[in-house]
Amino acid sequence: MLPKQLIILGVPLKHARLSLLPALCLLSACQTFVDGDKQLYDQSNRILAETLAQSRAKAVPPPSVQAALIAPLAPTQLARSGPRFDVAAKDMPANEFFLSLMDGAGKNIVVHPEVTGNITFSLRNVTLEEVLAAVRDSYGYDFSRTSYGYQIMPNQAVTRTYDVNYLNLQRQGITDTEVSSGQVTTSDNSDSSGSSTTNTTSSTTRPSTQLITTSNVDFWKELSGVVSMIVGTEQGNNVVVNPQAGLLVVHASATDQQSVEGFLKLAHSNLQRQVILETKILEVNLFDRFQAGVNWSQNGSDGGASLVGAALSGVQTIGGVFSATVTAGDFTAVLQLLETQGEVRVLSTPRISTLNNQKAVIKVGTDEYFVTDVSSSTTTSSNGDGSSTPDITLTPFFSGISLDVTPQIDSQSNVTLHVRPSVSKVTQDDTEINLGDKFGTLNLPTARTTSRQSDSIVRARNGQVIVIGGLLQSDNENVDANVPWLSSLPLVGWLFQQQRKNLGKSELVILMRPQVITEDVWLNEIQKSAEAFKELR
Image (cartoon, rainbow, N blue to C red; front, side, top):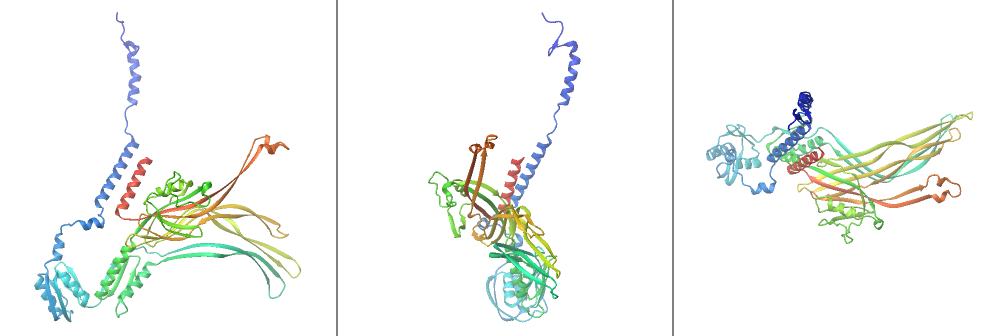
């Protein structure tokens, strides 16, 4: 027998209206909203994908691919090539020579009234522009293409303006590596009347071993000097540079203008070469059996990894520090080798992008000020009274990692690098200095610096890994352990105390891979950044 009341979710029908009202309010509050974070994520991915697609569409094929492809000639190229013919002239007036070319090539040629002289020439199977270029190189008659044909200019000085894209600045870099020693000096000074005497005691430093590398860049001054040498010192020749506008104005003959144009083209190509330097600065805490340093000839006989197909080449050993190159294109083989000989710790992974022959510096750390010089001056008057004045000098000490790199890139993408990595650690060391009876003893915070650095010049091919190693350091660590309460008992407390001394060695290893920038390299870097962005999100 059915109940007299309809049950909805265990609620009588007469109470259903009251029960459905809160449910409807709950459902209306739980309506679906657009996820803003997901929408932003999808939009950013779409923009990155479109950017990469557009960049790859505009990318220029490598020279080897371009050489293998035969593109159809454009109409302008066909017009410039024109028909080919033979040319022969002997002591022919220049004006008549160019007018005869107009008849033979079927092109409009306008000859300047001041074009004079005779021409002797014999060429076979050439175009009109090839003839004009040959005459210009031999006799100095310049030509230019215009909307109505070709214009022939006389062999005289002309003014041309060249566009030079370079920064208006001067750079000066100095890299200094030195080993200093100190000495104490004392001096006595007396005035002309002899009424007072001053005794000065101070400490100075002097370098015992020093290596200074300087780099000066004044592009616009050097450009003006080179172009002036090209055009010579003939009367009327002049060279003016405008660094702020990026312009070079030359007044010289047409032949000299061609030489200037060729120089600027080659200089622009060399200056625009750029390289990305991917660096890993590692510290390897060596195992007991490798206390003499990393064994780079390890071949994995004990089960460890080896440099598979990545043998070291060009090893140079000077005082335990060496530099070498690895034929592999990544750091994997070297890292695997290091992990078999110690605990590898990554100190820094800087990436530097710089132009050809331009110094780049990365510095990560802190500067702390310490007392480096203390001097006291004692002045004695004629009546025997004396006064002393202390003079304290504070100097900043850098603690951290710095990398100084200067690349030189040749036309074959080989890179020569001047590399100076440095890892320094500065700790405070309290030093007591006696300044006499008047001032007593001072406890001054001085600096104790532990530094590992090298200065080397290496050469590598594009994509090779450069290894700089041999920077060893001994590590001493004292570990004290005790049992609370029991270790403080008299007479027997030492039984519950323990002191352990850890001795070990660590080696600093710098890995660097230069990568000359091309269109494909930029696209790969953008792709890596896009993938890293996706992982981060």
